[in-house]
Length: 184
Image (cartoon, rainbow, N blue to C red; front, side, top):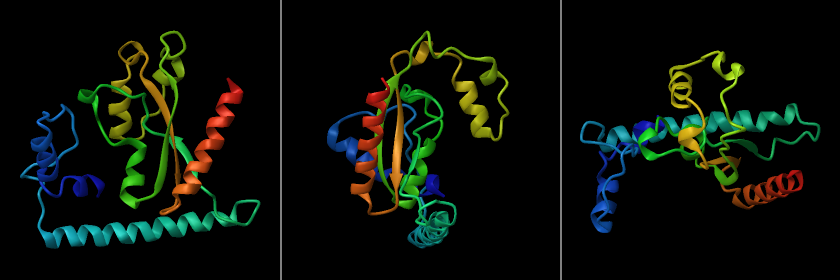
């Protein structure tokens, strides 16, 4: 659904920005084409589907109050940004874990946590033998052959909260950042 939304205009918005800036389209950019352009009616239907999905997601979020010790829904989620570190544009495979933020218009803060280290980030037997759950898992596993091409690339986390809770997301990110600094 999100991919279809991103590409719905056939890449016209991205092209307009590129024309203004004079910059070239970056290899691997997530942009539509004439084949992905949809009609206004199809766009409305797509947005209707997104809204229904957002309602179901919010219902599940609110239901977390049944499992928290406070009896309140969770404040937010701390998650990776992507299954591998930041990487060159031409390696882009998917939108990673930030997709749900874009789809549901959630509040989010991205935190750079560390950088890939050639010594610490070597492939392990656990990684080599990991159970593949989807074609995206397979593509990601194929992408990460070792730390060499990712040396010094950022490894990050995202803090996400419900829609229109930007202050809460910033506050949670500050707590995470403080905790990480005290750990180092």
